[in-house]
Length: 140
Image 1 (cartoon, rainbow, N blue to C red):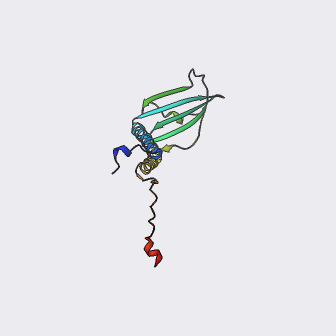
Image 2: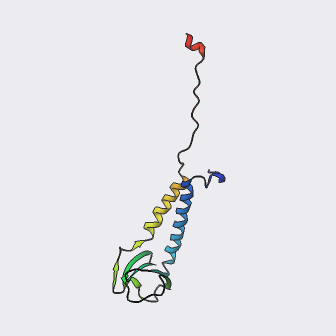
Image 3: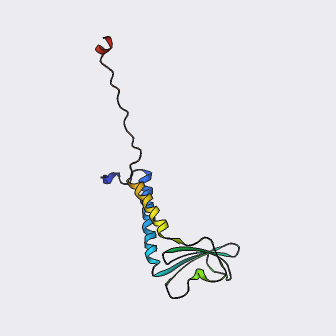
């Protein structure tokens, strides 16, 4: 058992808790993606918009040639699933990559955080003291 005073000692344990926090946040997004579609739009220079959409247990990343002039660089919106067709399926968009299932991100992050938190790191150990042999042994 790890003493409470040792929990946050060392960079590896601290990073492990940060990775675990990220995994927990993504699990929340995973469950939310079953009932709602969340999208983030980032307006990039050159008339291009980057969309990151979460729904149906997956992340979807798309890039779209801008057809409108947006007032803000960043926009987030959320709608219940079934209210309208999925945004990424509309014409004029190109896939950056295929959809990424949440489990492909959450499970490796959880394993990594468990390793970083629980696996003992290199322990600093005291060098053994070499006992000199008794002088009587040397003379015989």
